[in-house]
Amino acid sequence: MKCEAVLLAAGLGTRMKSRLPKVLHPLAGVPMIDWSIEACSQATKVKPYLVVGPESDEVQRQADGKCIFIEQTERLGTGHAVMQVRESLEGKTDLILVAHADMPLLRPDTFERIITCQSENSGPLTILTAEVQESRGFGRIKRDESGKIQGIIEELHATPEERAIRELNVGAYVFSADWLWENIPKLPLSTKGEYYLTDMVSLAVEQDQTVESVSVTSPDEVIGINTREHLAEAEHAMRLRINRRWMEEGVTILDPETTYIGFDVQIGQDTVVHPNTHFEGSTSIGEDCRIGPNSIIRNSVVGNRSQIEASVVEGAIIEEEVEIGPFAHLREGAHLCRGVHMGNFGEVKNSRLEPGVKLGHFSYIGDAHIGENTNIGAGTITCNYDGKNKNHTDIGADVFIGSDTMLVAPLKIGRGARTGAGSVVTKDVPDWSLAAGVPARVIRKLDNHD
Image (cartoon, rainbow, N blue to C red; front, side, top):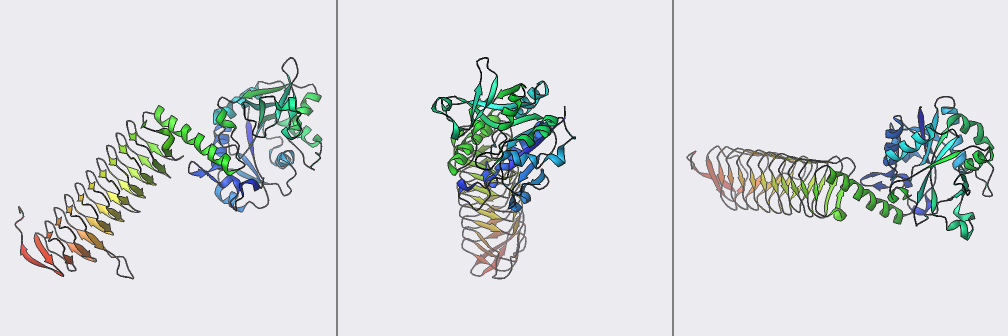
């Protein structure tokens, strides 16, 4: 049976106390709405319909291309929100999945199970339930003595006995599409002047129709987000879920409680992740790496068998068998080729370090190219900015840069050249030459075996 999905995202989210729409608050590095859209898309194999309110420009920009937008100009309840999709979906599908966009921990396979259940149900709908101790404000499932569902009791209107019921309405439903469109106009107007989708259950029972249910497999799926506290709960649950998946794939995570792995991150087998490490954005980590502790890697590529300790890597490419840190910083455009060693308190920006380069501690390399097997002494700085422009430094292969050298760009250091400690180099240095002094001058030629 064909199934379409409708996600409800028109709420104002006032309890978040934020100028940012609730569904755009990040969860594991991406807006929480992305998780709901992805789960529905995987379960139905089509883009979901997203019902948004009139002030939804930010939401539509974020979700553009991922779903089909339907505007609910008046916020008259969840039932009214679903009514807005009728013109787009009536007669075009067999089943309709309805869920809330602020329930980002619901899994694709949970939606698949509820869709399958309804496809086999002779009645008009199947609802998702959970048996948990914390009610989270959800309605209670009312059943008769034989176990048949009789209705959903909203927590606000429940008696003490009804509040003691532990089976909760999670807020996800799969309807027979024809029955939904025929009966949704019959929803009663609540005392608050709204139409509640939960009343569809009572309508089905009044028609002596069977309402089926599916229960979630994990309690963390029912964490709905209405406050910052809920968001922190969801972040913790999602982080552990992601970490568990990578451990199942062959990654060693020494302390999952303090490891943060984003939605789009990829990690190779037998990599070891130490505590307090963050992988963010579109980061890819190779196999047999050792990362952390206390490292942040964002939108970067790390090759196999590399080691990064207590360092920050942003927008960089790191090839195989590279050693970095502790306390190093790779910025946008840094490219470290195979076998590079970058010591503590080094910084590289918009530069390529060829294979075998050794970058001493307390050094800054910016807007530069460094040839293979070159040694950069401690305290070396490429003076790349003249107050107006960023200038380039080109250092050849097999060069030895003495400690505390200032390389004033634009500048070229030839193959096999050397600089004396404390030099300020303002002019090009030829191949196999030694330059020293302030300002530096060439003091002798070097034998190419020197």
